[in-house]
Image 1 (tube, one colour):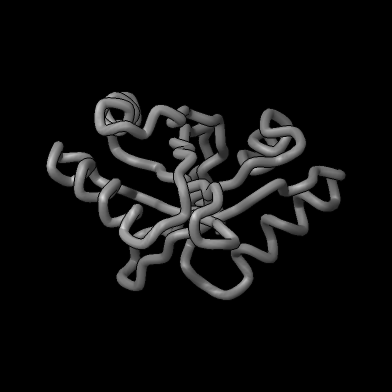
Image 2: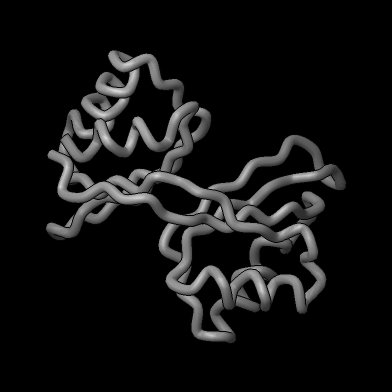
Length: 137
């Protein structure tokens, strides 16, 4: 079920949770030709801190652009990217393999594709190096 697993990078952007912040950030990226390949975000209350997580096709340029436009708290984090067949059980199998090896998933987000291309699972774990080795077995 796993087609490919590799160490990747995501961008973490700390923002204030306000209407339009995602639209603003994605506009900056698209206006500079940067493609967002995966995104996640979380916040609780308007006006409070929030985080947006992006995997792009050019993280270095994306971070430079975001900082230029005032998003100073933008940085890269190491993550694992697992490309899997988009079918029932793919996520279950990955999560079971990690659990059996006592690896905690700290956070996870995914993409899907309906026409034969792989789904991408982006995750950070308690031991990314060991988790990546397990995904490559």
